[in-house]
Length: 576
Image 1 (cartoon, helix red, strand yellow):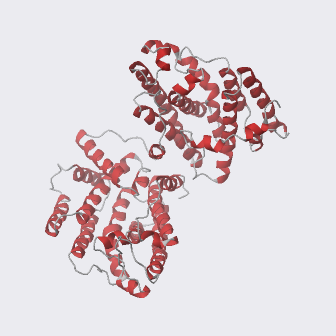
Image 2 (cartoon, helix red, strand yellow):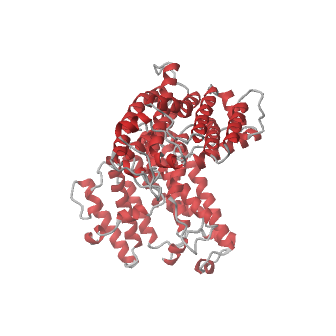
Image 3 (cartoon, helix red, strand yellow):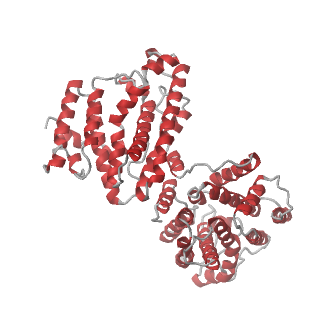
């Protein structure tokens, strides 16, 4: 073939993948699927690089593309392609989308401007739509006109958003994807594109085009409910990447000349777990629930990833429950004098009465949620009891408060089992699941206790610094562990007994997880995904601590955002 195969093989395709707006192959996907998606991506990227190679003339790029297309035919003819990237390609995939991608890059060699929006969309039908068709083929999604139309819209939106990010880079190559008619309408000239910063007119145009791309993405994302399993997770990742790219453009204010508006991974993760908002509520209730969701989003560092998997109404209700539970915890952990803490906790108890003042947005949202779901509000009283025990511990000279493991479990049942039962009131049991309400409540209680045991192991150092010890005295004695801090605030484990105690406690907690996770099959799919995600994050954290107990001696262990998102994605796909 007329293309230097070694030159193609030398391209850093993984680095290119990492720079994409969207996750090409989410790490939570099965290895086989990741490999198939990357094989497709590598071919697509190679075609684009052949069409964009700055070291070649347009005539040479055309020759390279034709040569690659000829080599591509060997995938389906049973031959051995010269280009290494083609050898991993599945011959069961359709060839036609690859041919359209080659055609798009051939078009790039002689078409460098588009007069209208419709002309640009016609180009995207060649350069973007085929990629979505290939992704659907990788997952074996049955094609239909509606599925393909929605897929094309998603891919077109992704392509356009990338064009708006790369206005400066494309212009330097002699290409402008901003439609000429739109440039005239917004008063944007060629001189504007040569400037170091975007003019006000260019900013307005970029933001306008971003809005149009997002509208296409919104329409195309209606494809997601029609997909299932890993296909839904993967395409959801692409949609999330598009939304994150739009965020980057909006943050730039439309100035795409000063610097390329780069997509942030944290935004991709946030959009990956997002769900459409629920039905309209009254203005007062809407504001109350919005307050609770803000508290949950900003403060529920682990639970947030599970809560976002719920449908809108349940998500709002669980956010309200979390916001009130968080308030109770914050009272116990705050800096108020003991008497004021006790008074504040008493005020929380009073707020749960039927005749309580509803001017507090968190109380208002909880009261409304309790009208819509069978939430056992008495569990909040148990949570207050547990936090009052924390306040009592703070007042003791000896921070060792729990003599036995059973004593500690009683505390965990108050502060965490109660939360499990509150969540269950919102989840509800799945009809025909085979469990009883009593069994579901028991499992929810056990799961909450398991999570709290994980918290205790994670926070040994922080709790000791605050004058609290939750580890049972009998366990400390059994392993000869003494809890002391050195001058740097690091836990001291002279004998290794503390590490042994942590490993023993982690194994014991795993038994509580095993019992509590019997709840998951009793729940509907979205509630099961939420419970599995929340518990999965904590189990992952528990495993990390057990594998390296000294890691908690000097820091507070946590998972990365991507690890949490991965657990949540697997839970949504039913593989938590």
